[in-house]
Picture 1 (cartoon, rainbow, N blue to C red):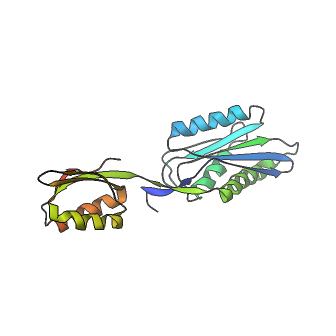
Picture 2 (picture 1 turned 90 degrees about the vertical axis):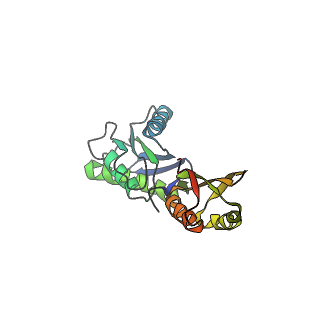
Picture 3 (picture 1 turned 30 degrees about the vertical axis):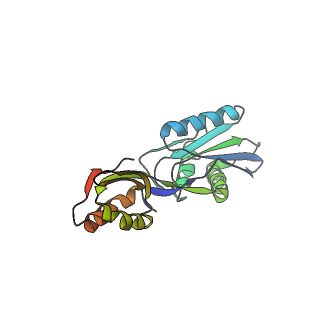
Length: 207
């Protein structure tokens, strides 16, 4: 796992737990920007307008990120909901993730420690059921080569998970590849070595 490829939620997931007759409904969503996270949170609040609380947390970027995060206790005592929810997703090994825990009060107070445990339980129960997909940050690389290099380069592409997306034949061959960003620098080095430095790079990368 790197900062350019990592697990993300594969789909929306909802899981319900109950603690002392209070219902905790955790909804997880893949979100790649803070705006997407806030939009998702708003949708859940509209879906459960009669809930006692709709507490939430989100993490944008690779697993464990701390620079693009958000959380809210939504009226619960400070620190008993949003923070433990955020901690749970930060330790999940999953990136680009948002979670809302909708609470319907069951009549029995849980206490500060009990609420922390209940919100943590709700998120972890959902995470245990969550299917993940791999997010890959892609780059493009275009270059010109002489004809004799075409076959060896094409045979080499799977090693770098590179896909050939354009091929143009003139006096030389112009190739455009799409590949995981983490493989871009190693591929450029290999191409330079294969061509004895005669390769002409046209553009280095594009996310």
